[in-house]
Length: 565
Image (cartoon, rainbow, N blue to C red):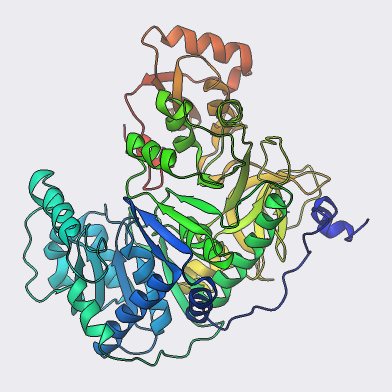
């Protein structure tokens, strides 16, 4: 069945039950979306963390109490509320509370330095912040430089007995603070405790500010660790549309599989990241799913312990997480006999990792693609296929993808250029940065991603690399992803990263950073492998062995930081 004109060639490769376009949105706001889900799903599990589960009803009741507390502060409609939380039960509660109340959410990475926290608070104009006690000392250092007037502090164990501090809450909070020494000293005397906020909020009713599709829902910061922070303005329609677009894509993958009545999602990536916010919170909620919250995905033994207890059907992650798990003997011993869909994003999934994952788990990694500016999902491999393609798949419903040359002209299939995106998930623009917004948008409203790639005749998209990471060697374009994919095929290599460094001739030399798991691996071994697999100008001139590579909060290797080494 031919479903498209040549311009939208990817539609012909869609599963039969996936529509070309999503229908009209059912809800006017994310708050209304949450309230509908709370009512529909009732006593079904919503979230589990550290052995404690809450139902959709508990999620709804507790978020209503927190929304009541926020309204008691006298905040104006659309006011920005900052949260600084890892993946704990309080996080989805507070996110729902902020959006149900009619305010704007802005999420801060809890591992940010005082400077980075100050920059985001000042730029967003947030007057309210809710954070975990472990990070209160960071806020204290910059509080006087911000507009924050209202502070709510929660502790790791505050949800173990609902709204009261029972024995387990007492034990957890004291172990975290006094035995593990994870709470540095701080002084924020005007702060309200999370449990007091719930008590105050539950004693009053609130009327949420009415929000509509085009209203701002989330200020999602990107690239805030260096220089001036930049926030994508994500509307209610952006998030709701992307949840619907992605949900129909997932539906086609689970159809016909031996799935339980309620799907369990692994939420290892932090909810303060746009991928997890949409995929683990919105999509899971959209289909009445159950989220397994992982506070610290770097703690591989603890993550494996959770995977022993819970059968996960939707396993979301990225290359570095998959690699770390595969290198753990206890993970390889887990029972993967149940059907599982594995989705990856955030960075290129290397072929050697995908092949090992399939061998160990029986699940094929379905690579997806997105950006903060697209709320975030743009494309994905078909979830009903059992082959790793090495591509980022097809544009999801209601999404337009074009490949542009340097002059902004759309290129035909097979030609390499900049990936540009159109669709209901594309952001409103950058917060208070009209000039930056203008730089990233084409005249006809397409978003320029800064990623280089091409589309084949079936609509499958392949990313070659980031435009800013491309290396120029003697007039030839060299893409770090290709080098890294080749080097990780070598036995003894855990992970690697390639960058270009300027030389006296005005060209780039390739410098390769390698993390090895076999001390016998030498510089000569790597060079011999590269000589066999790569043409001369793509081979690294410098090879450096490191114990680890710098990574972002979600585990993406940060090439920019390697340039300072």
